[in-house]
Image (cartoon, rainbow, N blue to C red):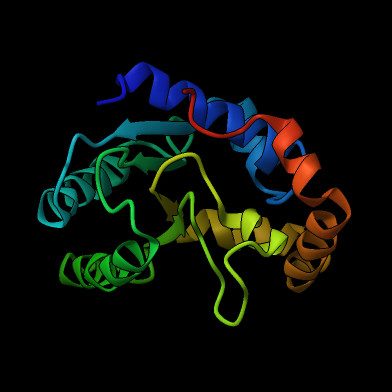
Length: 183
């Protein structure tokens, strides 16, 4: 088992170097700089245990003032290493959100070391926009998303810009960022 402090350090390095450094998410820098990103490491080894941790983190996010905790990265270093299993788990995560009456209040985004968009090859560099060091569930407040999108001139362009960024960066450029798990 990877120690939680190392999991968080790897995730923070990825956030700073890739997500913010490459501007893959133009909204990430603000909450990072303000210290509003909460890093939660799940010790779950099964999907059911991760689902329980997810429910607890959803409640914990809502219990905090957004000025203190705007978003949570729930990191699962010991669970759902296979991307297809992780992808299947997302339906359960969305069901938990609905069961908790949190649709329209919170949203769950997915990140994974082997993330693969539909219709792409596993080694396609564009998949790396969503590749994190560990399986990660990003818990976001809908209000924050709405404010960020309203302030951004063309939010629909983010995806295309990210694809071009990754294609220009290439596999060697990504590797140079050193944003994976610490060996």
